[in-house]
Image 1 (cartoon, rainbow, N blue to C red):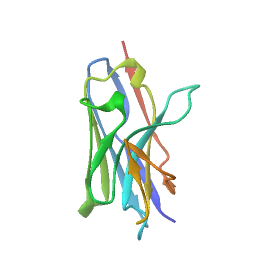
Image 2 (cartoon, one colour):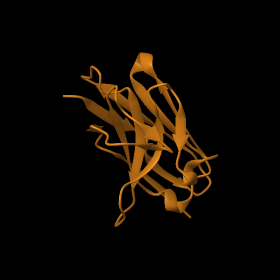
Image 3 (cartoon, rainbow, N blue to C red):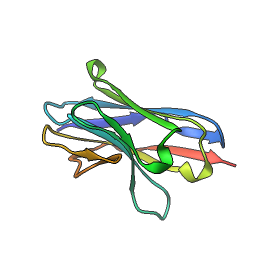
Length: 125
């Protein structure tokens, strides 16, 4: 039903920047909260940043000061601007969303109901 489509991934050198986008399609009440997660090869998925239903943004510690999450509700699009990238930022980045009873705490969207297909980010040293 609801589709989240990420774009903007790629390969950069350490210290570089990338901007990711996530556009929601065929949605109704499923994008009150939106967030980014990532998963490195051989590692568990982890939260990156999220936006709560009141518009408040929060981040995991590793993202603070380097990443900026934002959204354009008119375009149904979520963004993640990543600066000062490090090799350990390498991974598949996923967009996620949830409906009106959603909760975002400390950069984590709790129990997201919808996921994108992911976009690969590779940071070389």
